Length: 147
Image 1 (cartoon, rainbow, N blue to C red):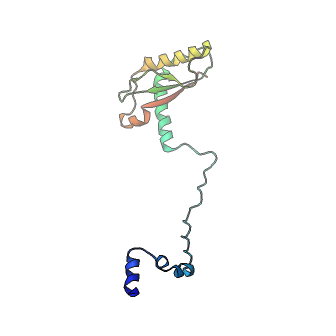
Image 2: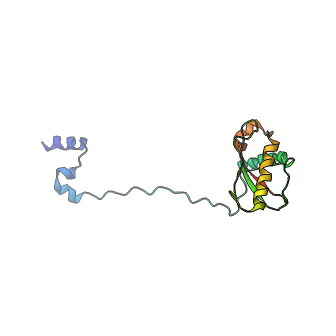
Image 3: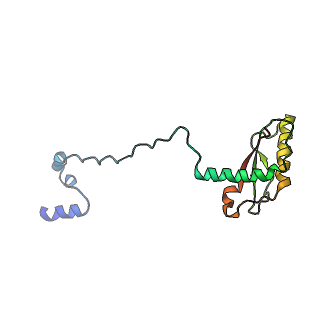
């Protein structure tokens, strides 16, 4: 009778150790699975160069700044201003330009520099940028440096 019972127990997923307590003591310990192969970390240089996307994005910002430069009345200060600009595919402003660094400054020099940069962005719109690359220039961070 035991001959028929063991195969049925194995088919059901039960080991011989559950059927016979004597087998549990003599069963070998399961072998651990081999450790997965983990590749060594990739070394990244300390000063990486710009990616292809960043270079194209910079060239779109440069093209934008070439166009806005003719409308920019530089303030009498040497204050650097960064503006975030959101454009539609036709080169028109979607929303007002935002100052990235100085939000509500009480400093009149900073305020004058922000106003001059913002006025230039409005005055030169719409901008001529490649429509095929719209996703790359829809949002631009621009630096207005009067130096």
